[in-house]
Image (cartoon, rainbow, N blue to C red):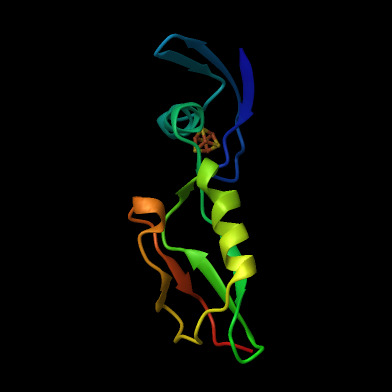
Length: 113
Ligand code: SF4
């Protein structure tokens, strides 16, 4: 059994999650979204990534993924953007498209500074 806090809304239900093969049983959730969150966390955990990238001109630009990225891919993305420079882009522009074939893009969220 695994204890988990649902972060889908501010209530923060404390849940107990029991995995038996493919069957996942969730208790402690006050609504169905908690069970969906627990199942996602067990089977395919994802996070929205926020970071800054370097531009070639010595400025930094804030970025985020436009959808949650599978957690195992996050360290590789952060290592990549740490080592490379990216051209300055308008807020909302795609900085890295289709990260690792996931369909998730890294987009600029503010002007380069
Ligand atoms: S289970 Fe429902 S009520 Fe509880 S934190 Fe998740 S979304 Fe909110």
